[in-house]
Each structure stands twice: as C-alpha cells, then as structure tokens.
Amino acid sequence: MCMQSQVLFSASDISGRVRALGAEISEWARGLPEPPVMLWLAEGAVVFAADLMREIGCDMQVVSLKVSSYGASLKSSGTLRYSRDFCEFAGKNILLVDDISDTGLTLREITGKLKDSGALQVKTCTLLCKPGKCAGARRPDFVGFDAPDSFVFGYGLDFSGRFRNLPDIRILTKE
Ligand code: PRP
Image (cartoon, rainbow, N blue to C red; front, side, top):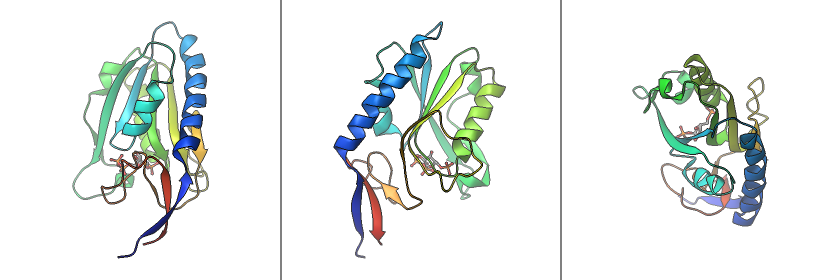
C-alpha cells in the first residue's frame, strides 16, 4: 500500500484557530450564570478538547462522552449508544465539542438528547466542518475550519485507528 497525504491545516494554523475559538467561547461562558460543562466526544476530539479547554479563560466542568454504534452498523444508521446518562446534564449549559461535523448527525442526535434531558443551552463546537456534505444539518455554533469533503486525519482524527497523534491535519491524496 502506498498511502500519500498532504498537510491541510498545520499545527500552527490549528493553534491560532483554537486560540480564537477559546476567546469566542470564553465570551459566551462569561455571560452565563454558572460555569458550563464542556462535553467532549471520544475518541476523535481528544486532542482538540485538550487544547481548547486551556484556551478558555473561565471555569468549566469537563467531561467526556464515548459514542458507539450497536453491532457492526455505522453511526449514520442512527443506532447509537452512550457512555453516560444524559440526565446528569439537566439544568446545565453545555458546550458540546467534537473534532469534525461530517454529515452532522452525531451533533444533531446528541444535542437533541441533551435538550430532551433538560439541558439549558447547548452550544456546539467542532474544529472541522464539511459544509458541502452536511447540507440541511445545523452548522455548529463555533467552527475552526471548513474542510473539503475528503478523508482527513491527524490531530485526533484517525485513519483506520492510527495517526491520531499527528500534530497536523492531513488530507489523503492517494490510498
Ligand atoms: C467521527 C467524528 C464525529 C463523527 C462525525 O467519529 O469524531 O464524532 O464521526 O460524523 P457525522 O457528522 O457524520 O455524524 P468516529 O465514528 O470516526 O469515531 P471517533 O471519534 O472515535 O474517531
């Protein structure tokens, strides 16, 4: 196999955008009566969330949520299961953080469950958004970069379970 890729967003591009997102989110959080909860989605958001939380200049609770699908079906099948009970977020303001909004289904589903469970505001934040693909889906409230509808990996996003630890985001040019 001769896999080829090129850098789409460098570590330096990313750190600049994460800093700016942190400032925007801090402004939102400072207007709240109580510290919000940053709910980040494992595994893909691990690197983004770790960097983003340190750019947010106010107190927050930080918790992770593991999302997986039943059986061998894809997440887009709509049959998802979660590592936490959404009831714990009743009465809280939530910042839902993920690495990428691809079709937008994951964020839409989790936002709906949080609201059904009594969460107050639910703001969504992704480092990447594929606007061409998620037509009809709600754009996240805070977006780092728009991305092309191509396979991307690095900075938390995997390629067959690997390469999450790359400091840049790369785009696959040849598999
Ligand atoms: C990826 C990504 C998002 C989701 C986005 O997760 O981390 O959670 O897909 O897709 P959507 O907008 O089409 O719903 P993945 O299933 O690859 O798991 P991972 O986070 O463990 O990498």
